[in-house]
Structure formats: C-alpha cells, structure tokens
Image (cartoon, rainbow, N blue to C red; front, side):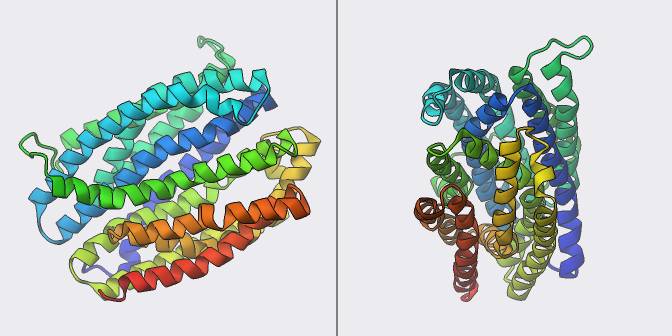
Length: 437
C-alpha cells in the first residue's frame, strides 16, 4: 500500500468498488422504476420513506467508515492485534445499533409520513413498505460492517462480488414479487421491500462465506475485552461520518416540507432526482472507498506525499464522472424523469430541475473528495464541517429564501449555489487539516 505507484494502486482498489456501485446505482433506478409501475402514489410513498431509510444506512455506513479508518491506521502502523480488537468491538456495536434502529424506525414511520402528506393512500403504501424493509435492518447493518472490514484490508473484489450479487438478486426478485410473475405471489409495494431485504440477506451470506474460508489479517475474536479508548476512537470518526451520511435525510425532509406547500409533484421530482443522482455519486463514492484505506494506511505510515497524491488522483477521477453526468442531464433530462413517471407535469418539472441542479455536479467533486479523504485520515470533525455546509448550513436557508423569490424552482438553484460555496470551504478545510502532517 505504500510502495506501489499511486495511480495504478488507486485504480486497482477503486475499480471493483466503482463496478459494484454502478450495479448498486442500477438497482436503485430499476427498483424505483418497478415501484413507479404500481402508481405515482407508490413512488411518492417511496420518496417520503427514503429519508428514514437513508438515516439507517447512514448509521451503518458512518460507523463503518470509522471502523475502516481505525483498522487501516493500525495496519499501517503494524499493530494487527489492535486492528483485530477494533473489528471485534465494531461488530458488537453494529449489532446494538441495528436493534435500536429497527425498533425506532418501526415506531416513528407513520407519524413521519403524516408530516408531509395528507393522502391516506400514500401513507398506507409507505407504512406497508416500511414494515417489511425495516425488519431487515440487522442484515443491512451486518453487510455494511463486513464491507468496511474487507475494504480496510484491501479485499475490494470481495465487497464487489457481495454487493453485485445482492443487487442482481434484488433486481431479479423485484418484478417477480411485485407483480406476481410465475409461482410468486403478487405483493405490490411490499414485494419491493421484500426483494430489497432478500438481496441484503444474499450479500450477508456471501460475506460470511468469504470471511470463514479466506483468512484475513484482521480477526474477530472473543478474547478482546472492551477498551473504552478503542470505542472512543471508533466513535470519534464514526459519529461525524454518520452525521455526514445522515445529513441528506435532514435535507430531504426539509426540502419536502418546502416543496409540499407548492405541489406533491415537486416532492416526487425530488425523490426521482435522489434516485438518479446515485448513478453519479455512488461510483464517485466507489473511488473514494478505494482511496480511504490507502490514505489511512499511508497516513499511519507517515507517507505524506502519497497522501496528497492519492487525494489529487481521486479528485481527477471524480471530476470525470461528474462531467459525464452534467452533459447527460443537460441533454436528456426529460427522458430520465420519464423512466419514473408518465405524468407530463412531473416530466416537465423534473426536466427543469435536473438541468439546474446538474450545473453543480462538477464542483461537488471537491467537496466529496475532501470529505472522504479526511474520514480516511481519521479526521471526522473537519469532514463533518464540509457536510454541514453542503447539507444544512448553506442549502436549507438558500432553498427557503430562493423559493420565496422564484417559487419551487428556487430550490433547484440552491443546489448549485451550495456546491460552489462548499467546494471552497472543503478544499481549505482539507489543506488546513493535513498541513501539519
């Protein structure tokens, strides 16, 4: 990790994650496509449930990022015993988080939905979907735990295989269970939730098989006692990273509140946008996931020049992905929205939104790369500052003010303004956080 030329090393680590993230993005789009075939109310329900789902994933991914950073740091410093203890305590804490979130999500979901919709049909669909999907929280969080452990030791092909097979299983099951094809029962929106949950179970089984058949330098073992300092270190990165991941839920909730005052169509458009943007941001995140253990390892080994080179190469690759997304959204916005709705009003409003929001894609590369690099370095608080600017401090006030001036379209302009302002803050934060090393 500290001897191979940086760019080939980054590509070898990132490519499996980019491929798996592309498949994951395809799953997000295909899953929403099938739900949209049920009705536009079903798509609205999915859009409203999304912030709660994202929060559950945020806790799992955020804590996993903290675990990844700590394991990578100890491996870089040559302390395999400490890395194993981090993995062991990380598993126990992950299961605790899963139980709490399963109970909490099921208790709050109906009240949450009623905050943004008065349609009993939408609320009923959302509750029916949620009652199944949140029962798979333990499997989802266990998956993300093993994903981060395998990534921390450089086993990117394992995570690629697990994620791809789980997503493919989900895509195959979606139409079968939703529409009742062949011997399968017709379950509608509950079928979409069940297909997602079963896909997660498939991935978890594969991760467990790899863990027990292919030895890792990091082992989960019972002899590791609770170490408060270790737990503190996991949360020192994990809590800011969780907040980083959870902030989009807060943002979507706030924007749904503003948009619902204009029309339910705009709520659907926002939900569609967040499904579509995964096709760009998940592959970019795949590159960052490839960078994260490398940058943490080299930081632990004192290789400062390689740390900065990893940052620069990751930024260039992310810019390439965002350039593609910008061009495509400018040329074919209506056709993208039409994948999820046949309503002419939704397609027109969504096309306008995509053209405006996509103007900020390129510059957002600076923010996401800086935030990911800081997490890999174990600097959770500076990373959190970037996400706070991107998801709350700048965009929510801007969206509120601009919506009063330009109507619902003002919210789409707030995205670009936020990305440009946050990019400046992000790069300055990264340079300040790493200048002493």
